[in-house]
Length: 293
Image (cartoon, rainbow, N blue to C red; front, side):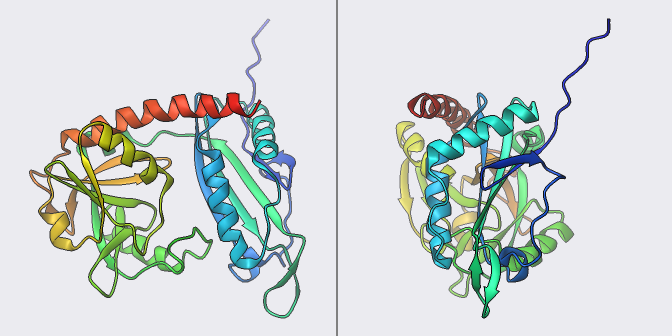
């Protein structure tokens, strides 16, 4: 008798109810659609468990407070929703996108009722190995995100920056503000290594969760960490430049605006840090899951 394989399927959670991704209908009056008003987070699993879920939810609710939405569920409840959605999906590892909306338009410009938490659970696809082996190129883009300390669904500025990057054949665009400071990537934090000193912007950018995780690891390996503004010269004279984000972890940058970093090849520290970071994430994800059972 032939073995029937389990069908894999993306899932979505809407205020605790779980559906196949293509099933639910969200009202067109939802303010995230109608006004571009909403907050979001992205995280991934390690060893089948969400990593840094508490930190991601804390940041999500901080951003949601901007439009007066209070937490819609606690971490333990959301962890249970995720466990059930992942089991239904059949995926061993998942990428999760969570969006919090003020809900459905009710009055005025931003009046809303019935706030909504939408959590999309999809299969995790590891980034291409070439990003880590060969490095990536980036460009700079004049501009800065609105409310850069928060992750909001208003990505119009990022769209223009990433279109410019795509036209240049680059992986990412780095925001350069009116002061000439390099603040962050459209979808990442940026860091540079000078000798044994890591320089990382802290002002005018998202305090990334991956960034926070890298800092103690870099210090464990004997590097010193400095939160400070970056300028173009800091990147071009660096020994290494890295991007960091939840899905990509740490990616080495080998050129900025067509100019090579050092020898135009990934340096040794990016892979060393990424290997240690991944090990730490795997152990943390399992420990967090045990603590919540």
